Image (tube, rainbow, N blue to C red; front, side):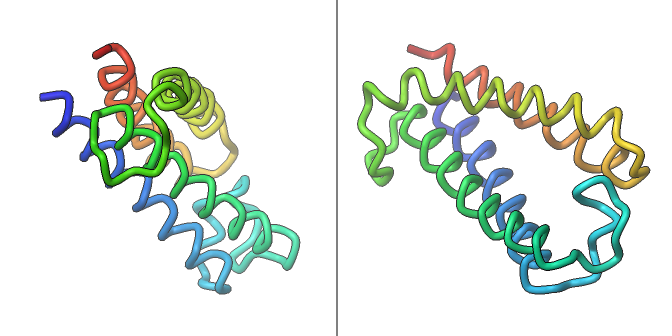
Length: 127
């Protein structure tokens, strides 16, 4: 069960990474990110989205390693504590999205981050 949970969490992280890539490329989805004040993100937030995409890919690799998948380049000792870090960051992200001024962030990303945090806690707890 932990491995499937890790796969689901990693897919979620990669989905968020893909969304961030679309934002960095200039897609008009800015109302669902970064506070929702821009339809298309300005350059500085597009750069931030590109960095966020890389962070989300790293988070997916960490969760996969934490779930015991050898395909991840993250070493097991690092994955043990890093999975907890990812879970904590997802929980903080859920809270930030749930209190956002952006209705889309509250309705979409708050619950998504909360579910991903729960999945990641399951993976992290499975030592």
